[in-house]
Amino acid sequence: MKWVIKSMDRGRRRNFYLRFLGIVGLSLFFVFGHISQAYAKTAESTFPPASMVQSAAKRALPSVVHLDIQKESPSDLHLSRYFPLLTPPKAKVGDLIKARFGTGIIINPQGYILTNAFLIEGTRKVRCLLLDGRWFDTKCVGMDPKTDIGILKITKRGSYPAIAEGDPKHLSTGQWIVALGHFEPNKPTIATGIISAEHRSSVLEPETPQDFLQTDTQINLVNTGGPLIDLKGTVVGVNDALLSRIAPLSGIGFAIPWTIASHVAQQLIESGSIEHGWLGLQVQDVIFRSKKGRLGFIKSVMVLHVIKDSPANRAGIRVGDIIKSYGKTPIQNVTQLKRLVSRSPVGSKVKMKISRHGREMTLSVTVGKREETLPSSDLKERLGIFVIPLGRNSPKKQGGVIITWVDPNGPMGRAGFEPHDIILEINGKPIKTGKDIEQVLNSLNLGGYLLFHAVDHRTGRMGYVQIRTR
Image (cartoon, rainbow, N blue to C red; front, side, top):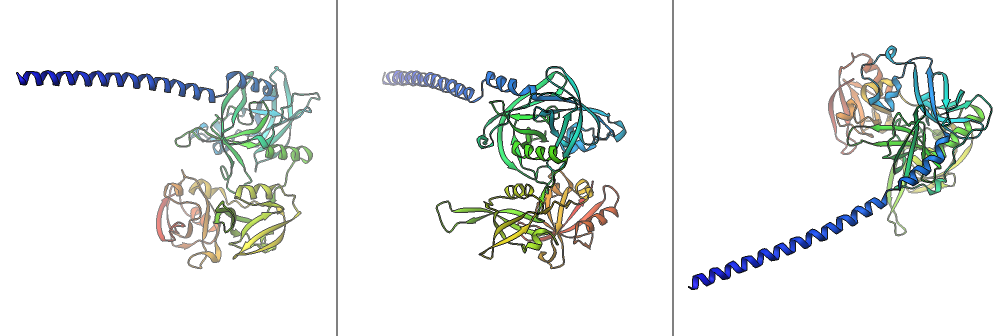
């Protein structure tokens, strides 16, 4: 009897627990349901309304033109620099079509059109189509491949719808923007996203004065050369390049900030060309612990290499110097310094404040004309690197070159090489300049093997690495 009573008590307790767990489960279901709905509404509210995007696009699209481009030569192979997956891997020059298309932006009522330089390079004829259906012939005014800006002008006199310029002071990371394109006649494209980063440099070429806006907006061949606008319909950048369609870089696009694009455009309109200031320095970002203040750290730039007989060399700048300011502007990063130097008039004198072994001094540098300091295409195409001489700073005091840029998908990148690593020898031959590497490459067949004697910049350890060239 006692056993039966205990059994009944145990059964009641079990039913009680089951009911309790059921009530708790239902409560959690309703609570989390409300939370998920609230989260969905909050997430939905963070996206700009379609009406706002449409209104911004409607304001800017009359200034966005379709470009019908005919080339002197059918060679479009250099497009792989910007859109590697759009060029057939085994295509020959003769197999590529002579005509192609692109997007441009009318930047003033006189009919000047801004687009990417790589789109109109080597063109025979370019016609533009406005949103209202009118076709016009254009002429090339000038190009600047270093910033990838090209200017066309509608040959027929008239008044044309110019795009409204945005205020760069209101530009910020996380801001919603819209990329517009007009790749197909009468079929403009609209893509939305945010600015995910500012002041991105060394994206396409490490030695050029590039200063990109990074965005997750779809930038591709359909809208390259078109405007990147804010939700007010004013232009903030020029669509330029898609880094990769392969994870983890999928969807990362780059646009030229309007402050740079408009400056270059004005110079091209006035003179047909532009001269970029040049100092002859290789620099890198550094961070120091602050002795004063609450911030704790100070961002600055350190000199890694000074080119012989360059403006910086003549001014007395040395390897290891910390650049504190350029003119009246404090320097915090490499991109900022490149931008300031590039926009400095050639021949102008600029005061530079530097710190050398803890002692501050001011030097006067005469800005020179930017030199073509990039090595031959062999280093980039066959190895995926750029280098500069290291000279007396090499570990063995016997020369060497320091890597300034590495293509992560190239032979050197796949082998683990990084910027600032040092190459001392290749196949037993001492390397002192980029030309020494070119000579070794020229002695090999395509796809040959090289044995590198190198120094890891992270650990300072030397070792040998075998690499197969492209």
